[in-house]
Length: 147
Image (cartoon, rainbow, N blue to C red; front, side, top):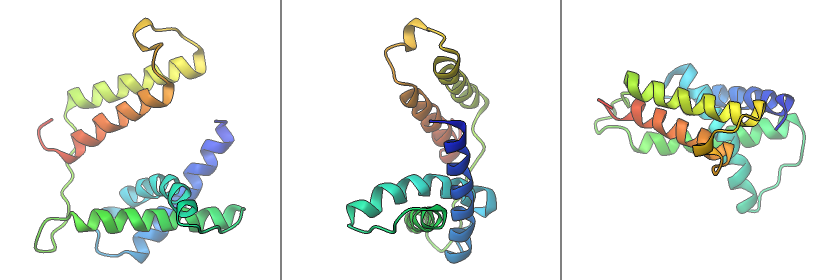
């Protein structure tokens, strides 16, 4: 993936998350989290819509619409898991060890991919798998208190 592709994904996801946060009000996640959900929603929308037989064409506007649909889907699903009584989902900052582990995994993935560094333990994994593991560790630290 080129730097230009990554920048476009971030831009489209950011716009989509912002739009989804406006459309699905009351989720309680805030602007930054909605933008992050929009970035993930861009991937969800690009995966989900073709499987439903929906094609919106190409171009920047179509990608924003697809990503917004994915982000709205995520916000609705996350809204279903909110605490009873209409309360907000309370996210906590990850503990320092979880943060360091996720950061180390992300740095290892970047070294493997961009610098071509060979690390014996990690050479059998794809770079994406290492980054996904780093994200899952960070997500677990945010969702579950005390880890």
